Image 1 (tube, rainbow, N blue to C red):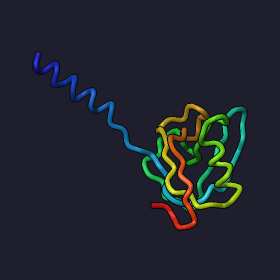
Image 2: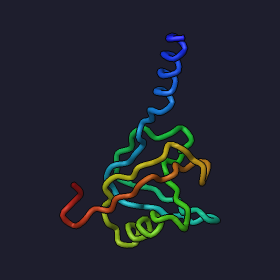
Image 3: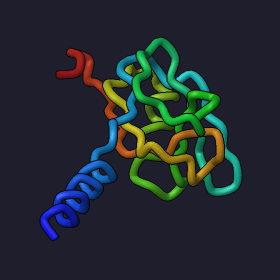
Image 4: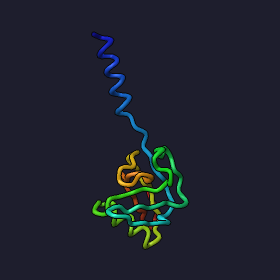
Length: 111
């Protein structure tokens, strides 16, 4: 029974650990609106741990999400972004990673 519980704990730990996919720095250089999804691309940033499904290296947000106005504001103003965090999935649009968080930096820079 101890072996069973040990294996169960190891299994649960392995599925709960997920690498955070993100892009650090850059600007929103492209915005596309398709159906209910806004797809955007960051230029000049550093990508890490992007999922295999994000073949275009773009991110996606639902048009009604709290991220949508931030994406559009960053694009329209040319503001630098801090870190864009992804969920590691491409559920909204098959080749663009779903967005978990979106940071716009103030004029003094991101912390």
